[in-house]
Every structure is written in C-alpha cells, then in structure tokens.
Image (tube, rainbow, N blue to C red; front, side, top):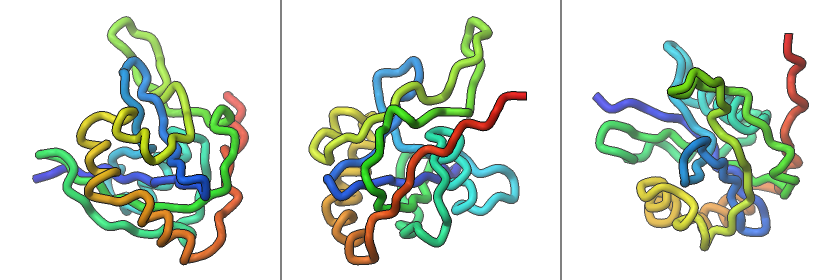
Length: 162
C-alpha cells in the first residue's frame, strides 16, 4: 500500500512558487508531510504548512488538486492557494528532527519564491517532474486567478517557547 504525503502549493501573481530548502540536502521542496493517524489530508496539509513554513491558511481558501502519483511507494494529496508575495525570509520551520550526531535540526532551513521556470533546477527529480509536467504551474496560476484575488498570507508569529 502506498503512503500519502499532503501539501500545499503557494503561488503568487508574479509566477513564483514558495519552496523550502530541505536541511542538510541540496534540494528544495514544497511544505508537505504525512497525516497523523485519523487526520484528514486537508488538515495534514494545513498542519505541515504551518509547521514547516509558519504559514496559517484557511482550508476553504485552498483549491483541491487531488491525489497524484509521486514515488513508487508514495502519492501526494495536493492543494493550492494564490497569495500575495511576502518576504520569504520571514518563514520559519517549527518541526525538527534529530541528526546522526544527536542535534535537533529544523526540517527546512531556507525559504524562497522560485520562478516557475527554475523549479526543475531547485527540486529533486520527482518533485520537479510533478510540478512541471504532471501539473502545469502557469495553468494552475490561471485557475487560481480565475477563482478570486490573491490572499494576503504571511508567516504567523512564532509561538513562544515554554
């Protein structure tokens, strides 16, 4: 049985997509991850985007792109939203992992608005193919424009650490 990863494509009117740099890796990715047991795909996508970018979206503002083949053992459930361009440097990742040396590291350590024509050079092969061939980012942007104006999303303030 294939696993499912859920994520949100954040696009802006300047034909750019928000990408996150995967810590300790060369490639960039979209905010995405697995659902918790019993968690709906939409809620998993919203949670992953909040944890990995600090961005809080409303579920009703998202365009459901459906389930897509991704890797031999993993599918993606994707959503998309049109947002005004904001300073990507204000994004922050609150989800961490422990590396081989026992250090706590953020899952994502950089954020960038990437022009559609540079996505294939930034992302790992399968993600690049999905975003540029399976989906057409320019056509998706047109669909989002047709569904309404861009939202004013931006990273939420970090929660104070206890």
